[in-house]
Amino acid sequence: MLENDSAEMGGNSRTYLTLKALIAIIFCLIGLQYLSLLQVNEKQRRPGESRALFYFERDDQKQNSLLDDISEFLKPSVSLSELDILPLKATTTTEKKFFGNGTSSELKVCPMIPPNLHGAVKVQTDNIPSMEEMEKTYSFLEDGGRFKPNQCIARHRVAIIVPFRDREEHLRTFLFHMHSFLPRQQVDYGIFIVEQDGAGAFNRAMLLNVGAAEALKSYDFQCFIFHDVDLLPEDDRNLYTCPVQPRHMSVAINNFLYRLPYDDIFGGVSAMTVDQFRQVNGFSNMFWGWGGEDDDMSNRLRQKKLYISRYPANIARYRMLKHNKDKANPDRFKYLYSGAKRIDKDGYNSLKYKPVKIVPKRLFTWILVDLPHLTL
Ligand code: NGS
Image 1 (tube, rainbow, N blue to C red):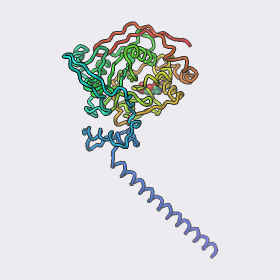
Image 2 (tube, helix red, strand yellow; image 1 turned 60 degrees about the vertical axis):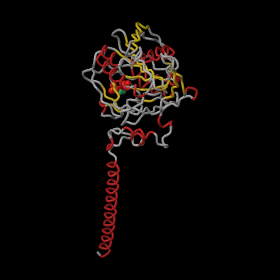
Image 3 (cartoon, rainbow, N blue to C red; image 1 turned 30 degrees about the vertical axis):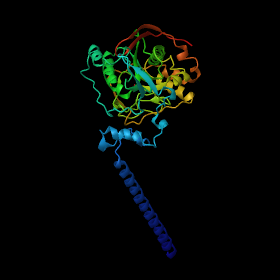
Image 4 (tube, rainbow, N blue to C red; image 1 turned 90 degrees about the horizontal axis):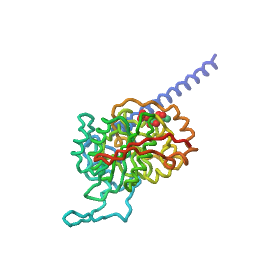
């Protein structure tokens, strides 16, 4: 009986000790949780914002103070590679500009951080002017929707390539937005609208290949920005410059609650240098109908040891215009799985197309193209 009692008492004290330890652990956990909450509250983040890239973060108290944001760029701790901006070759730091009256002046290379950015910008989606009205508003453009700054030599020559069909209203909204957004970034750019002729399945990737080929015929562009017509950037610190590594730009889209849907996504808006584009042999020509072509490009990049870079989600924000979803391509997974075997023979080097029209209009270069179904 006594033995039983002491055994029971020993058991009780062990249970008591275990309970005490458990309670102590629970208090520790509550304490830790409290501390981490304090840290989060210290800087409220928007959904999808990156934790690591503090130099880009917006201070909510000074949301409209662009200078504060930009001065972050200039901190010595931020290296050129972190900014993901290609340095300019030393040979082109100045250029003589000649005026009609016979005088000339020496132009300097534009600053790395454009001085007149606004930060967050309004995206207008209604009461968009007609093409004719816009041509007057943007009379500073050269034919082909071409712009270059006249105060300095642009650091980047960028072809914006937009696959297109049947979306006239989106196109007007896009042009209206982009031609007010891009000049502030002091890039030398042109907009190429690549329209697929006929009513067959849409081939976004092949249109992008065509746009790249035609853009390079017209000018010495350094990089491409492949751009869906229904995506409008909401912050002009999202620089449309040539990337060091391929850059996925539409990181945070309103329709996806400003969150990246998955890590390897390369659709929507993405930038590549001409050299990177050639390394991966451009896009596959095999994706007819919606989906997969951008994932195939993502696989090509990985295969060629390039990686996808991104601006932080509080800057790389986009508004998506409303539209009906296209019919998905039932063969997309088949082509995705066999992509690695095709990279060297299906792409930019096997591209064939029939240009129906190539017209350098004031707001853009219009490329109407007939796409053949290629076989390997
Ligand atoms: C994936 C598609 C991508 C597409 C992405 C986002 O599922 O091509 O959704 O699409 N991949 C496949 O279908 C294999 S979105 O919702 O933006 O239209 O880019």
